[in-house]
Length: 235
Length: 264
Image (tube, rainbow over all chains, first blue to last red; front, side, top):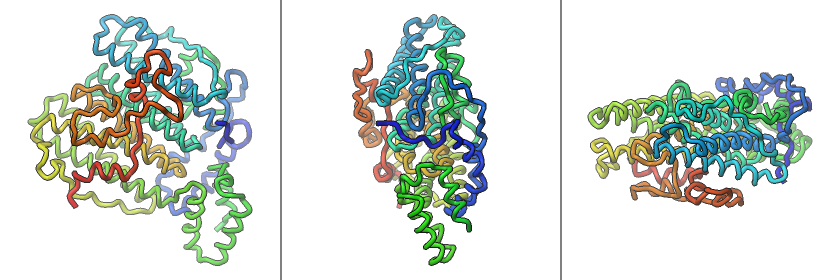
C-alpha cells in the first residue's frame, strides 16, 4: 500500500530530466510568481551523477518507500549504537549521562520500530552494523560518535523532506527530526557545555545542515556492514 | 511565453503532477484557453489556481506561511535581544547561550524576510511585543521566569514550524529552509530546557508552568499513523513513546498561544 511512483529514480532516465531543466524551471518559477534569488538550493538538484550503476546490495525500493527505508536504515544504525552504549557503558558514565543515553536509545528504538511497522512488507531487513572503529570504553569517543550520528540524522531528515511525496510521511519526518535535533543539542552540551547550536552544526544564517541521501550514506556507510544499493534513492 | 516549456519543467520537478491534476491534455486545454482569453499578466494567477488544484495550495500560501514564520522569529528575536541587555540576570554560560540563540533568531528574521522578498512579497513589520504580558510576568527581572518564557517560545516554535512544513511541499527550497530552521529551534529548546534542569525532550504533555500549558497540549500521543509506539519494543514506555515523536500545531493555535505577548 505504500508503493508510489517515484519522483526521480536513478537509472530510468528521469534524473537526466532533473539535470537539465534549470532554465525551464526558472522560467516556470518566474511565471508562477516567484523570483529567482532563492533558487540556489534548487539548482543543486541538477548536480546528479550517474556513477551508481552497481545493482548489488539491499534495495531500498523506490519513491517514498526508498526514503522511508533510508530513514529506517539510519534509525537502525542509531538504535544499534545506543544499545551498545548502554550494554557496555563507558568508564565513569554518570547517572545523569546514563539517563540521557538510555532515553535516546529508547527514542531511536521507537523510531526504528515505527518505520519497520509503517513500511510493512516493503521494509528492508535488519542491517548488520560495524562499530569496530568506536571505542565504547571511552566517554570522549562514544560522545563524539553520538554527536556525529545525531547531527547526521538531523541533516538527513532535513535533506530528505523535499523528496517525500505523501504528506503524512513528510509530517512524520518532521515529528522525528526535531527529536534528533534535541538529542544532538544535549549530546553536544555533554561534550562541551554551550555547543548545542555551535557553528559546526548551525551556519551563519541560523540554519542546520541538510544533506542529500547520497552524502549521508557516504558518511554513515563505514558503520553499516550490509551492502545497501542507493541507486533508487532520490537525488 | 512557452507554456509547453512550463509544463515540461513542472513534469520534471514533479512527475506526479498530472495525477494530482487530471491529465496533461486537460491541463493544456485549460491553459490554451487562458492564453487566448486573458492577458499575459493573468497567467501567473491561472498557474496559481493550477497549483491549488494539484497541491491544495498556491505560491501565495507559501508566502503566508513565511509571513507567519516571520512573526514567530520576530517574537523570538525581540525576546532574546532584549534579554541579553539584562546582563545581571545571567551567569557566563547562560549569557553565552542566550547570545548564541539571539544571533540565530536574528539571522532567521533576516533570512525569512529575504525569502519573502525573493518570492515577490513584502515582509510584514513586527508587531509590538510585550514579553511581560504587560507587566503580569517578571520576564526580565527573574531568571526562572525568563527561562520559562524562553522554553515556551522555543517549544512552541518547533511545533509551529512542524505544522507548516506540509504547506510548503511545492516549493522545495523553502521547505528545506523551514526544516533547517525547525531543527535549530529544537536545539534551542533542548538547551533552554536543560538550563531549567529539565530533560531536553518533551515527556507526555508535561509542563511546570500553567501559563504555557497550551504549548504542550497534544504532545502525549502514543499512537503514530495507527502504530502503537508504547510497548513496540522492550523498554518503550508511554513516556519514551511520547518523547520520541513531537506533534505539530496549526497556525491558529500558535497565534492564540502567542497572542498574550502581542499588543494590538
